[in-house]
Amino acid sequence: MSMSRKSLKIPSISSDVELCLSMIESGCLFTSIGDEATLIIKGGREEVDSFRELHRIEVGFAFIDRPEFPSLKIQTLIYNGNEKPFGFDYFFNVESKEETALIRQLIRQGYFNVLFYVSEIEYLKRARITHEGKMRLRSLLAEAR
Image (cartoon, rainbow, N blue to C red; front, side, top):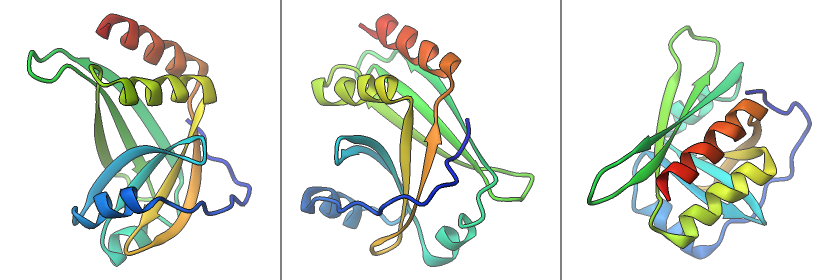
């Protein structure tokens, strides 16, 4: 996965997304903002500042078959110069029309934005999904259905 080096415009987030973010101290949320799939990573000031010097982002996908919550997992590893990456896991509910639409959006786009958030959006990066990653995601979505 590669990151875009160009400057990206910071989008506005809806009041619903802001409300969801206000309920978590630290973690991540996948959503669609301005018709683009977006991973919002929320953390404390120190943690978010440590991501400013991103070196690379790696993404992996897996299908988790649980009777109560079958899901598609996206694991995002962020390398900021340290050998040990920061990991963020998000579980898409494959029984949700909204969540499967977001997965399809990821496949179509071939990238997603990564917003870093403390009490507001601090900065934005773009992560590209490789062709192999898109094929894997498409295959896992088909398996989940």
